[in-house]
Image 1 (cartoon, rainbow, N blue to C red):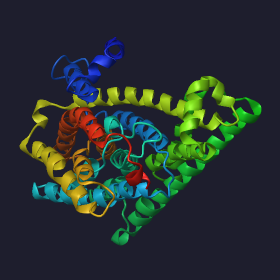
Image 2: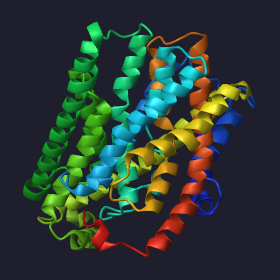
Image 3: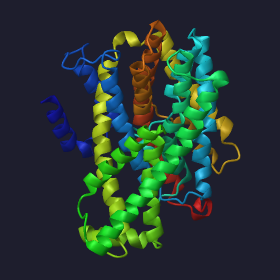
Length: 430
């Protein structure tokens, strides 16, 4: 009943909510806290007892979101526009992990918990950062593209450090001098995940487009096809022991790249798809573009539902005693020191203006990905007094990040769009 009323209320007030000074995720967070054991007690979730459930809920939310991120990115893989997000998803994240690890260790955490804290809080969130992501398939703004692609990549690139943290806690085998970790948790899962997802996404797109063009089959089944591709990609990734998040992101990216290859006149293709509507599904020139648009539209709707569910869950888990000096200190350090310092230190020389670098340094929202890695670690057996400190720090950081980053995204990005005055072909030509 509560969920039904909440969904109806959100649907009826969507336009009004967009003008509010707080984002939807912050409202879900408050609703979750009100429904939790500290207020009305309608929901009773415990991180240790319900770790597996929480892991799977957040896992599903991240999968849907990173698939949508891949679909948003129409820029060719070899385009220079990818340089900034690749830097931010790797070197910038490594610097962030190092800074957070040092902060956690300085606050008394052992090596394993300190690294787990750092790895969980390092990736930015693809679910909650929609206001700072690309606005449409042809959007080549460097800031929005960089933040979007970074969020799609760094949930996967954070995984090796979570596994390293579990190894330091005695919950995962690292091998002599970490050799097994390099092979099993870094090289093969990363490369294998990207290759698997890219191959499946490409084959899926070509097959569906061929069936629609030549046989007029598989029409109007975008929801089944979308969920099927995500589930198949992630299931094979688990079977092959590669990173599923990277695989699903690569699958979404491959679907969009097939559409780009089939639509040489970008703007005209998108306009034609909008004009034809469902008739474009089997059109010889528009089938690929229609499929990409329909799949993305469905994925974005599921993403909104996932955002609501996970933020309610996070709100339920946050207790008043989670706000300790350590957890608040870590949250402030993430938002005001680690993220800004890491971005500023690693992006000089990149094709970003001074204002774009400052905005990239600010918009490092933490959310569902951090919650997933926390639940994953607890489900793997991470426990003890220090894990309570880690959990409190992660939950408080998510809450603070949602309130500050989520609520500032809309007004700041509106101002950014006005100052940019539309696309700048010279800078954004890549």
